[in-house]
Length: 174
Length: 174
DNA sequence: TCCAGATGTTTTAAGTCTAAAATGTTTAGG
DNA sequence: CCTAAACATTTTAGACTTAAAACATCTGGA
Image (cartoon, rainbow over all chains, first blue to last red; front, top):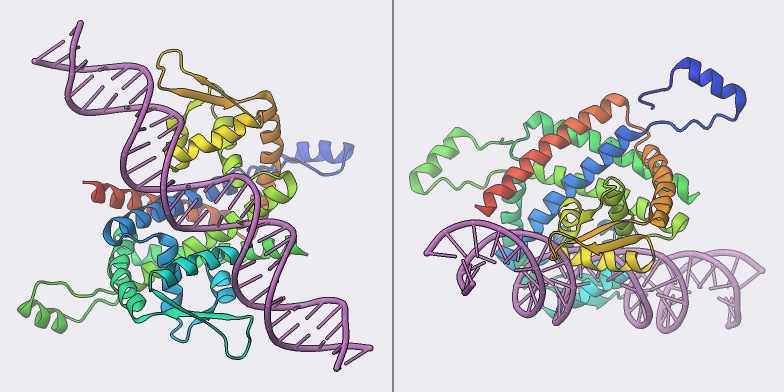
């Protein structure tokens, strides 16, 4: 995809003298990326503020508990790390503090002694459910100006964006 | 906006007995938020990896230099903090390290001794320009599957999202 | 002039995060 | 059975991040 493509005459002139390495214009994609980043940063900050104000909890802790709430049988640290897209060492520390505060239960797998399985304690689940209910209303508030159609369209375009980005990651890793 | 609105009969029944506090369903907005977050995290991680591999620089440093590149006359720390949407203390530390490495110049304002004005040094600008050129091609690669129309549409919807979120922030702060 | 509030920055304490090295465990091939 | 490679987790060192308190300076009235 190319916006603001150079005119044909310029193309031709250039092609005659050197390998085709024109500095293409990707300003629109760059602006899109900055806007995406701005939106996420803005919303993330707002959620962070409200979680702190209302429940005195950090966003990473909330996110980790959200993952575990969806997995009644628990998850391994690796699973959590992949799902949250953060490093392994990061998860170790987060879990440590949440076990300490009584929100998480951690045990070594019966079948593989390398593996740590973590799950929400009764306290952890109860507290998370309370937070999650309110969290959902915050999200509705934050996205309140979007119509149903906007939401559908954004979902579709972000799915496409995610796929595109994943392919780029894959290409680099080859 | 409301998806899966409760039926009128339920509404009526409930309204008779207590204040209208039905647990509305905002699952779609929640999914949208998670997808937005996933996209940003994925792309941010990819950019971070490439910056480290290729230039041995961190993303926050790159971002700070990007702000300064657009301001030849320099910026105050407060300006930077607002633009980057990070805390003041954060900027102090970042700037410290970039001054140390010779990429930034920092001086107290002539007219207001509270204010620190920072700008890119010659070295800083040269290095940033090199990184920025490559960075732009990475972004083009990452968003490569999107058509021109997709980009336009995403820009529009994210602008609307940003506006909506800003209003929510405003409401909370009142 | 004086000074109370506003503004700009730094400091502090604690938490989050990463990449890379180290540790412990399992698995597969010979 | 042995062992090299793969895998899961933790540790390490350093950077980034925040909120809140502390500090410095400026500004606009009384």
